Image (cartoon, rainbow, N blue to C red; front, side, top):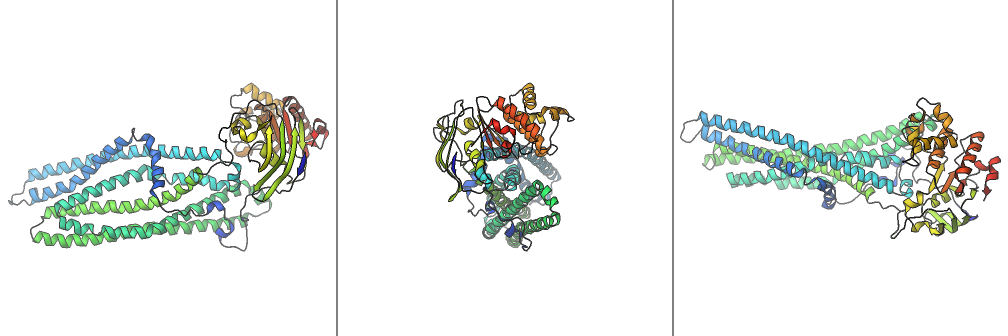
Length: 589
């Protein structure tokens, strides 16, 4: 291997987590990903959210629409029946009250309330069904897309920041889909119906009351930008808390080893307080919106009673119609108030949707090129020609790398920390694309074949191996999901893992807990070896994979790998594996 290497390990670019002299959390813990998304509110994005309801439009929306119509008609009919009861049954013009008519109208009003109640139950049931299905689809799309994103995407973002998109931000859209959209339609229909009825009852009184609507619109327009930014700030600070929690849990051993619990707690308290203050600000704006609407509605009520009393005296309006008018106006301000709250809810949803669609719109930097073909079963010839790679533009990690590995060879890459050994592994598996030069396998440029067909023929065992929650058997089977129990046990015996597995309480069915915490580092690496061998890769890559394994077990694994890798490539990265008698099995490059 001819290498001109000038590199340092690639790291996430973030401000150091702890600074004792700083009191502002947002100065100590800032990720580029957490910058506020300053985009104007647009209906295109809302339409994009609503489009998730389309698959269920024919199944459920007609039922919801029917329940909406029934509920709206019955609600609008009740004030009219009340006016009839007063003007024709209680104080008719002929002066003879009719108890029979009053009873009939009372029964009719009661029936209307029952119909409205039943329609509401079914409407809520159907909207909850469609809302939960939409949330399921949205979360599935987001998670599916995140799994396709390239390593450089995760290099720039903490795990907690990604986690909050899939959980908190998606959850914040539930009210919008389960209640918000349907209530918005209902309120708009009710408003139109009420305005028409008010103008039909008395156009003078109707216009006088409706004149306060522009005032409400002006108030909502002035507040919407501030409210939207406030909820964006809440989402950002919650994301930072999630990031810190994830980091603290993962690094709890280091924290306790250096007795930094108190400092870590102070840092968390600052973040927690920032989040509380941010929520208080946004909530105060939210809560202040409703009272402003109510005050404006109270002003409209003053106009109603003053002008209504005048019209009664002039004989243009009856007492029953004024009472009905009052009820309609009450019903008018109710949806107006809900629309104001709905707008706030919409702003919260927009703040979350912006962050969700920011991820969904992120394009993987490593993806199949147009016309990419499936890589056929390979022999394993690997060739790097004058390869140059940069994690960041202008900062070369590899410069002029030449490497030629023939099929069936087993080689080791040896070099000091940061010399680029793991980087070469990342390029072979196409976790990153080379900046310049050429990288081929069996003569195929790896950028001209599909990513899936390439990675399916490469197995990697890392020093810091990852064990999933579940059983030991499930973790090994992750290498090849259609493997039989016999095949799983065979590879476990081959790498020396069978002995410790059968001694565990549940054997191969033992639950290993999150990240395999109940296993030693060496046991985790043995399971990782078994997983890699089960996949039967054409190229097997070890990235300092035996660092936590004793010499005796290492020699046993060496023998197993020599048998398993017969006719295949075995590329080992790191010096630890070759500093013993096993070195004779490798040609050290």
